[in-house]
Image 1 (spheres, rainbow, N blue to C red):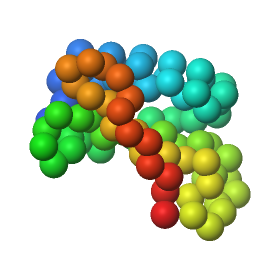
Image 2 (spheres, rainbow, N blue to C red):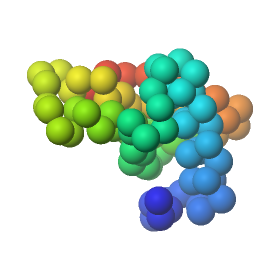
Image 3 (cartoon, rainbow, N blue to C red):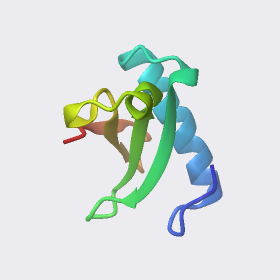
Image 4 (cartoon, rainbow, N blue to C red):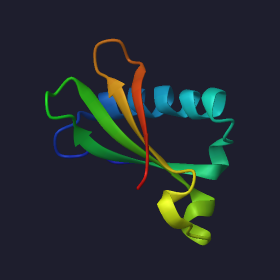
Length: 87
């Protein structure tokens, strides 16, 4: 995935690794079941916002966004600090 205008390429690579590991370990998703969209920074600039799109949600949309989630990754600790379901 290419870097967004505000996120450096190196940071995108690290975000992909951390978020991918989170989804595999916490959500039990396989790497071939999702894609990531980098959405920029939180309002305070401390977190990178990533949409984790569960591919099945795109094929068979369900009310409320299905399994797809928005994740906030703390830029200092490189940890997911917030998970929000799609509305």
